Picture 1 (cartoon, one colour):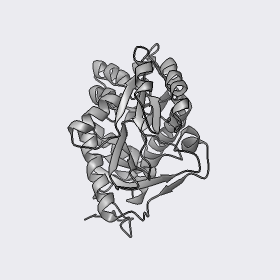
Picture 2: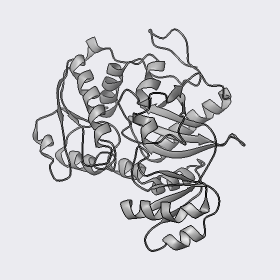
Picture 3: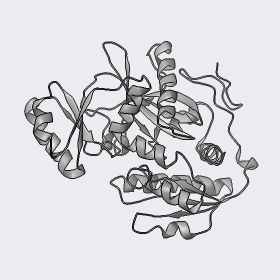
Picture 4: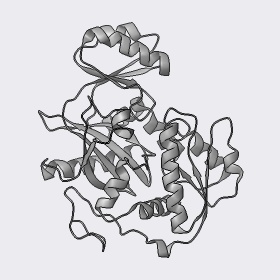
Length: 326
């Protein structure tokens, strides 16, 4: 059963026990560099996340600077720091590259290590790890320039076409009509080098944040768009994030347990977010992906879920630092 924090009057549905947060007045000040921006397509979102984290760490009393970084300029890491808070989404932030650089320099940082980050960023490798761990994931094919025609010809039924390694649903398309499949696959292959062609599962979209080793409350995402795309995530003001769900309690608990297993199957640590689709006919949860650097914007889901168990944004940032350094 859940042990709520002192600030929590009631226990939200689908909540596991989370250790009480560290309060701001107990913080030991550190020299912290917040990395934000980066070279990827999620740059603007990363800058927004970084600004929110930077402000929170300043409120907590840390000596904090926010720095841009990329593979061609890592001078942000030349500044002495006790800790680096990575708020880089996608390329160079979630693919293990900046983690390798930090490991080489012996600098502590938030979240998963290089190997787990690289594994989670590659949706194909992650899905294979899910399967090995006994976690259901939609069936899929990978299209490349060499096998594109064969994959298109052998695909039937509605599918989701997406890049193998990218985030924020950039260049992700739902394809209902077989006549549109070839164009969608060619577009993604041309832009990203390979395309994941994944069976479309219809049903509620859920997401579960992991803090430490424990699942936060399950959140259902509802959008008026065809699916939870980039605009639904970061632009629309009417996307709904629901925690008081009508789904069976047993299903919510199952999704939490599976989220913890998915996090572990990739070797993640301290923090992640696991995305799910629930088959509306069978109620089977299908894992889509694990995000090792989830967002910290006003739209972001992990801060919303943490708040449900009494962990406010500042406390969440501090908790991530402590879990990562441990």
